[in-house]
Each structure stands twice: as structure tokens, then as C-alpha cells.
Image (cartoon, rainbow, N blue to C red; front, side, top):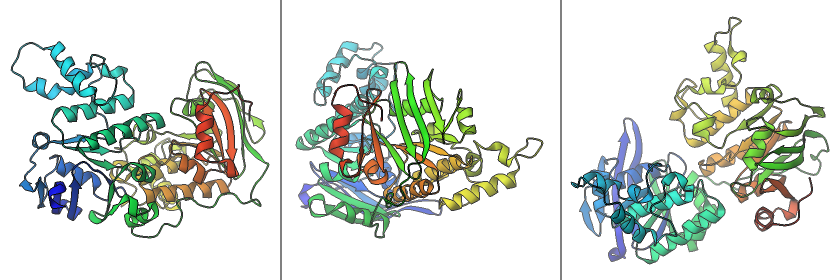
Length: 506
């Protein structure tokens, strides 16, 4: 098999001060394969990819391309070796054309004083035809996220890419967009391009990859043929312990209650959603499913008054509420955890303690209105302990934490106001499998304690695993409800995508 290898990593190590990010790592990539990299946050996946792409330099170890030892001193060297890296965070210039973005590096090094726009568009068109029907003269800001990802891939292919690294490429895609990406991946693999695919989603790995390598705590653990292993075995290798179930037990029949915590009636925001009615019962976790763009987040933001002009009724434990602004919603104990943890959920440069108290400043302030550091720290430590937050101390910045622990800080911020209802939008996006299991447990514990929990998720296995009922949203309306044995991916997708008669309120 040695002749089949395009990339080999041998005994590679990398440290950042006292932190050993990679420890004697080995890795092999075959020609034309789709090879998944799995591991919890902090396992070393990103560090290894940054070394392969020349962004970081290893402390020791060797890298071989086609059996020859190489030194990848910079991303430019990586590109010359045929290595392309499509990062999770898309980095395109929105106000110029697709063609200009694809050939920006070449244009910057050109000695010509004039731009050959026609030539750029012609060459870009040749590359884009391998990926889909995209107009190279279109401005990037007019593209969907999935189309922007295709542009990033096209940039890599123009560099005679032989190794393509895709980092969490489906994180912001709809099911349909993700399927288009998978089709393109398989076509590229058939053309002999080797793909390194980083993902937390087991279904994607087992549906579309040939092999999977597992990393844990900066070390290489194992490589398995996908056809010869199971998701459970990979998860257990990732966390170093057996996780029997990613989801806690659901409500038992004895726990079910007819008591209504939240009652929403005829909620409407023109152009976004229409006639939304549902009830949240005590002790249950209610899910909201639907394709991206269906209106799930808009409905929740409308309830919390984070959206535009909303009509309809919202009642909390039988009392109709008068909500005008989000501060009114917070005052009533109804809070929203954004899907954009880094943009809206946390102040990454501020301390953990400051983040936790952000919605409850009065709790930690003196009678003069000045924040009492001891109260703030005590609040963060109490809630952090409740959520099993792993950190050095609550005075460190939130940016220093893993994705799972950042999400726990965001949840602690919600809990600081003693909420009655929490809306969680994509609560485990970008979170590793071990942290997912912990967050699911936290949500079930909160529901059992009497807090109303409503979860929006694009991951159908998560909705099915953690929720007692799921409402499906299609084109701004509730198209149906699933529970019990009817809660299947097929049923949810049918309700999310098939147009029927106008649905009745649930």
C-alpha cells in the first residue's frame, strides 16, 4: 500500500508553551480516498491540519508527499505541493466577483497593470463546471453559504490541488446543500483527489468516507475502515471511555403532565411566519425542526421580541404577557440562546464570570450600581459547577475554552436570570461528541426541574434523541407534530419538505 499513499505524517509533535497539542502523531492518506478525522475539541485535529497546510511548523517529526520528505514552510508552499484547505470560516471578499476571488492570489503577484476580467471569468468557469452551475461574474455577496464553499473549493482546485482539507464543511448548510457537497466530494475523489474530512457528525462520516482516523488529547489513536467499524466504536475511541447513550432517558409516562408552561397563539410576523400556535408542557423538551430558511429561528425570536413587528398571544403559566422588547422577555424569564455562539452568544474577550452575569448585572452589583467582583465570581462558580464547566478559573477569557465549555458558559448566562423558558438554537453546533452528551443531560435535568426547554436543531438524530415532541416548520408555518414512534427522520423530512394543505394549529 506504500505506493498508494499521497501523504504520510510520521511521529509529528507540536507544543504551545507547556501545552502539547500533538504528541508523536502518525497519519496516512491514500490517493483518491475520503478520509475522516474525528476527535473531541482539543484533540489536535486543527493543529495537525494547520501543520499540513504550512500555517504552523512542527517541533519534530516528518511529512512525506508521494514518499518524499518535505518541509511545508508556509501555506504558499502547501499550495505548490497541491494541498488545499477549505476552512470552516469562509474567507472571501464579498464585494468582488467569484472569478476575482478564485484568482486573487495570482492577480496580486501579476506584473500586469490591467486586469483581464474576461480571461479570469473564462478560467474560473472552467473550474466551476466541475462543481456546479455558478456564474463566475456574480458577486460573492449574492451567493448562499453552500455556493461560497464551492468557490473556496474552486480556489483550491485552480492550484492543481491533490489533497483537499474540508473542515466542518456542512456546519451551516441545509440538507440539500450538504448533499450537493457530498456529490462533489465523491466526484473529486473519483478524479484522484484525496480528501481529508473533519466532522463531528457520525452520520456524515459513515455515509461518505472510506476511512476514519481518531485523535484524542493530541495523540493518534486508531484508523478504521468505515465499513468495518461502528459509530459507537469511533465515539468510544474519541472520548477514551464508553458512552452508552448520547441522549438521556426521555419523559416516562409517570412524569408526563398536562400543565402548560408556555402557550403561543396565532403568532405572526409578516413575511416571516404565519399563525404559529403551540403549547409547551411541564417537564418536556419540545423540538423545532425544519429546513434552513423555514422560519424556526424567526419564530423563536418573535416570541422573545428579538424580531420585527409581531402579533399574536404569548401566555406563561396561564398569564398573558405584554412583550415589546427582549428585556421584557428576560424579565418574564423567557430567554434565547443564539445559534451563533461566537457572534451573539458570548463576549469572547471577556471573562467567564462577566459572560455569566451579562443578563443579570443587578444580581452582582452593589447598591451603587457597581459590579461586585466577589458576587460575580460566586455566581459563575455556582452555575459553572452545576453545569460541570471545565476551566482553570472563572476569571479567564471565554475564548480560552473549548467549544463545549463555551456553550456551557452561554447556558450558565441563561440560568443566571432563573429562567422559566429557554429557547436553544442549535445548542450543540461545533461541539464534540462528549460535550454533546453532557449538554443533552443538562437540558433533561433542566426540564425535570421545571424549566421549559425548546430546542431548534438541524441535526435530526439530536431532535429525535433529546426531544419528547417535535414540531415541524415549513415555509413559516407549523406543518405537523411528531412524537413517540412517529418521530423518525423520514417523517420529519416529509413534513419539512412536502407541500400539503394549510396545516392546522397544534
